[in-house]
Image 1 (cartoon, rainbow, N blue to C red):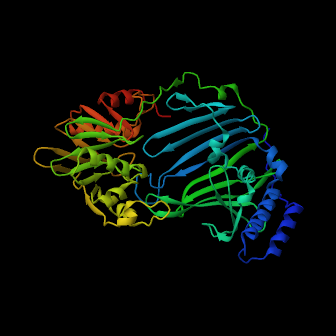
Image 2: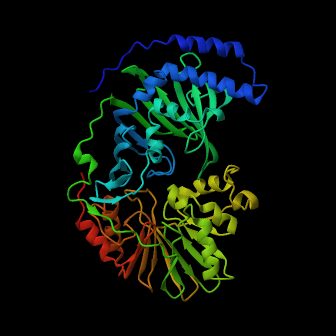
Image 3: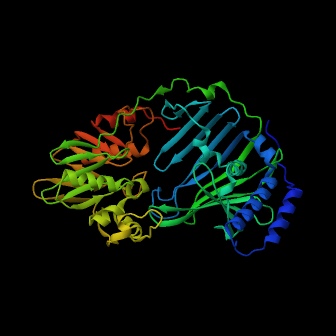
Length: 505
């Protein structure tokens, strides 16, 4: 049963008492650790009471919620800077905490014709993950609800319950201001995944914000924020009407809560893998290095493939993912004594360019497109104290060159590497592919993504893949081997097979 949203929110008497206690404590900073704890505990108790009381919140761990909104693809859009591409996002949560049962279903879109639909199911100690678009699934043994807390924490009352598990670590921070300029009273609160900084409305004690600091690939040390607004009561529990997430002051997702109820129904069809779904084979262990040709390797530190090409005096590497430090260490064993002169990110998205600082610190030149020069300069200069990297210590200047006229050739007279800009692609306005004409090897990032098992599931290809195929045909290349950041080396026919098994919604 979905209960109506109540518009008249009353503050219980205990909250009034807690507000008075907080006033008696005063607004000055805590003078001792016990004082910090008491202030935080007083505020948390008031918030729990305001949201429905501890018993009410505990009963509200059996629920269903439908959410609808939009993703704002910061650092993942076609353009390198705002305004970013936005795409629809839908999710449904069905939860029965006492029975250890959960179904989390999400559908979303990604720039370039990427359509995603997935489901996470936990039923007792067992469970599975399903890719509803590609018709595949894999089982997960010994599953715990706690693994889904990032999704569960989309509901504020579940955040408060998790914090109550270990109140001794509560600490008072004091007044703060959200991105929108709204004042909050902040505390540090422990949870199983890690501590949270929670901001509460000073008057109503509603949970207004989850605040944090992170290492952003572009900005370095920066703030993150999730805010909850437009609260209403559903069955006595405060439920927000809107959730907004941001990084570095830029909105990344906006969600509205469409339906919330406290009598969840777990249809049998949801607790089993979808009909016709294929069980994914066990992914093979990552092969750290595969020699594709003399002096040409696919380097995989685990989940990401980089193409490495050795010339007589230097080395060229493709992509700059978060695992770049591990890739660089591997390169030094493959081509000892040869400096990494070039790194070629295929496009500006975080997972392809976010590790470029490691190459800057190494002294390599970033070869990119004209529109990305400012992006890489800002990245190289950013301050990182939360997760310092090598660039944080050496502070090397960023060396950047661009591909102009659609093509750049790197050669020592015998070995040739061609870097082609095939943009505007549906996935990024500027998109590089790396072509080794003598070897017939073509490397790409996100233009075709396949599981490490080597299977070609349905809908693995999309509009971005179709554009890629057109570009290859126009170039007249005879491709003997195709590989990519999210694709193990294989024959070029994989692209055609993937396109033949494509159906956009």
